[in-house]
Amino acid sequence: MTENSNRKLSIQTRVAQALHFVEAETGAVVPSIQPAATYARDENYEVRKPYWYRRDGSQTTAHAEAVIAEMEDATESLLFASGMSACTAVIEHLPTGSHIVAPKVMYHGVLAQIQNYAANGRVTVSYYTAGNLAELESAVAAQPTTLVWVETPNNPNWEVTDIQAAADIAHAAGAKLVADCTGTPPSMTKALDFGADISFHSATKYLNGHSDITAGVLSVRETGKYWDDICMVRKLHGTALHSFDAWLLIRGMRTLFLRVERSCKNTMAIATHFEGHPLLEAVLYPGLASDPGHEVAKRQTNGQFGGMMSIIVKGTEQTAIDTTRFCELFYPATSLGGVESLVEHRKTVSGDGFPVHPRLLRLSIGIEDADDLIYDIEQALTRANQPV
Image (cartoon, one colour):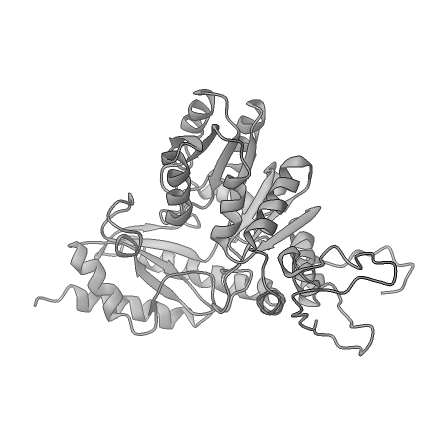
């Protein structure tokens, strides 16, 4: 591109090139890892960069944050050592007594953290059914609300919440909206475009895509005291993402668009194949036209719908567990968004106290051949339903 060209490069190109990175000294096209824990000041005893100690971040982490901010159309993005530490920072920065409105069913770790803060008297919480805007509005109106939490699509049932409508409800009450769109990364869903104040992603998942780091990221367009407070929580807790993990994250993001496209295509093929299957009670996937959230999901994900789905197996809870045991290609493991396909019996993983169907299996669909994955589920279901 010439210096005077007015043509804007696509986000796919910019991310694939890590923002057209070229190391000034060597010409390297791959960012280097800056592992330092401390930094020398200049000859005037001034800080050379915004980070001067490991807890403030690093050059490598800042580069990863810049790539994410570019994808999110954000003013700033902030990386944490895990998705949970990012979510904790959002809750931690709230004044004591703040009212949070959250889904009844959501990622179990964040739900447990919110409940823990409520049990200790730090916050109060009202709950709504994911995707139900009337319940959300009623919960917000119950008392002055500080924060509304949306997870869409909602883990593990994949209900879809209209982010723009939720933002309108939150803002009318003077609250901020946090949107967890981990299941549909910014190559699909830019929550800030739909009115969210804070976009959250567990970068462990699709952004990294290789199941070899944990990371979480918050992105915003409008900064201010609340954002400064969240940044301070990260600094005081020491949860800035370390340089090596940030480097792996940059590497992973460079193939994000390709990985997500393949994953979505595979998931649609699998969901379509198993809808109405005689050994299944239900297939939960917003990409199916029969799904209640299909139209909203189509608008919020550019018609890609995501690589996560769940199935509810007929029979007993043990039938569902046996189905995971008998899978030969799907790994019986927790997480999502990697290149490999995973299956888990959600109740076993989240515990008896979590409100999830006892026969629900959560599937993270990777980039393998879709026919191979379909065959694997078929044979596992057949074996799980054979008489003992």
